[in-house]
Image (cartoon, rainbow over all chains, first blue to last red; front, side, top):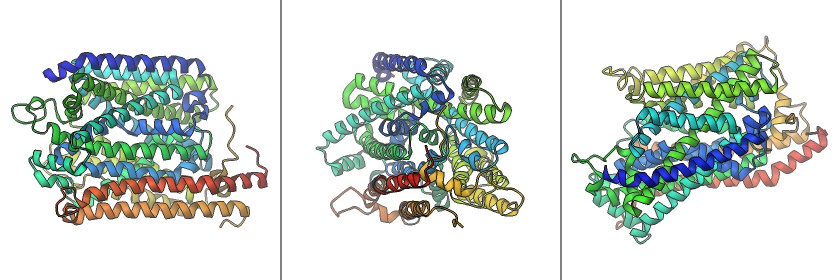
Length: 521
Length: 99
C-alpha cells in the first residue's frame, strides 16, 4: 500500500483542480441555461469536433480504461477482442442511424419514434428502456468507481459513492447539457493525453520496436507465447458471436450516445462528430493494447506491485495505475488516478442526463402532464436527476459486495435488442405500426433481461445455482432477432387497423434533408 | 412504394442507402469474419508474422480491423459531405420547404 499512499497527495490535488474547473464550467453554463432545450441539448449549438470529443468522453469509461488494460495484462490478446467490438459499433451507427436521428428528433429517441407513430404508449416504452439502461449502467460505473476511489484516496466506500453522485447531480441539474459536454471534453482530452504519454514511455523503453515489447511481455508473462493469440475468452463460438452482436449493435442503441446527435445543429455536424469520436476511440483502444502489453513487460514481475501470493495488490483494476508509477513515479500515478476519477464522473453525468431527459420529456411532459410549459419541464428534469442519483446511490450501496460484472453486458444487450431494432424499423420500414413497434421493443427488452438472468453470470455467479438454463454469456444473438420478428409480425397483423401518425414519405423526406425540423422555441 | 416521392428525394435516398448498406456490409462482414476466425480457428491467429517475429497474425488482424472501422467512417463522411449535402440542398430548394 506504500505505492498507493505515495501517490495520494498529488492525486487529491489533481482531482481538486478537475472538480474546481468543472464546477466553474457548470456555474458559467447555468447562467446561460434558460429553456428546456438548453438543458437537454445545449440548444443544438455544439459543433462537430467538440461533440465528437464528448461522444468519445461518454463512451470511454473508467471501466474500459482500467478494465481493458487489466484484461490485456492478465490474458494478453483477448483484451483486443473487446476493444474491437467497442469500436466497430461506431461506423455502423454512422451508416445507419446518425443522420436520420439528427433529422427526425429533437431531444430523445422517443421523439424520433413518436414523430412517426403513436405518442403515448411508445413514449412509455422508449423511456422505460432508456431509464433501465441508464440505471444499470450508472450502478455498474458507480460501484466500480466507488471501490476505486476507496482504494485510491483512502475514503470509505459510502463516502466515495455519495461524492460521485453529488458531483454528477450538480453538473447535470444546474449545468445541463452544456456543462456535461464540457466535462466530457475535458475528461476525454486528459484521458488521451495520459494514455499517449504512457504508451510513449513504454515504447521508448523498447526502442520504439513493437516486436521488442511483445518479446519482453512474452518472457515476463506466466502464459508466455499464449498471450499473443486468442485464449480463454473464446470458449464457445455462439457466446463469442452473441457478445460481438451486443457490442456492435448495442452501441447504436445506447441512449447517452444517441442523445449526442441532438446536440449538433445538422446532419453534417453529426457526421463530423462520429468521425472524430471513431478516430479518438481507434487511437485510444490501440494505446490500451500497448499499455496492457507494456504492463506485462514492465510490472509483470515487479514484486512492489504484487501481494505475497502473486496477485496484483488492490485488484487487477490497479494495473494501469501501477504502470504509471513504474514509468514515471508517484506524481504521474497521481495524475492518472485523478484522470480515472474524472472519467467516472463524466460518464455518469452523461448517463444521468439521458435518463433524466427520458423521464421529464417523454414521461412527464408527453404522458403524465401533456401541455406542461417550459419551466415545469425543466423542474421535472431536475427532479428526474435527483431521482436517478438517489436510485443509483441506493443500488450502489446495496450491490457493494455483489459480483455485478454482468451489468455492462446486460446494458449492451438491452440497447441492442430494444432500442436498435425499434430505430432501424422506424427509419427504414414502411409497414411498421404502433402496436408492432411497442411489441417488438418490449419483447427485446424483456427477452434480454430474462436471458441474462438465466445466464451463468447471474444464475450461477449471483444466485449460486449449479448450472444455468441459458448457457451463453450474452443474449443478443437471440434477443435481437426476437425483437425484429415480433415487431414485423405484429405490424403485419395490425396494418389495416392502425394508420401511422405521419406518412412514411414525410419520414423519408425529413430523415434525408431535415428541412421540416421545427426550430427551437 | 415510393411513387409519390419527389424524384430528387428518391435519388438522394437511393444514393445514401447504397453507400450506407455497402459500408455496413463491409464492416459487419469483416467483423464477423474476424470473430468467426477467433472462435473456430484460433491457431491461425497464433501464427507468427515472420518466423523470427513474436508479433502474431492475430495482432495485425486486430489492428487492421480497427483501421478498417476508422477508414470506412472517413469514407462515408467524405462522400456524404461532397454529395449528399448538395443533393439535400437541391431538394430543399425544389420543394421550397423552409427550415
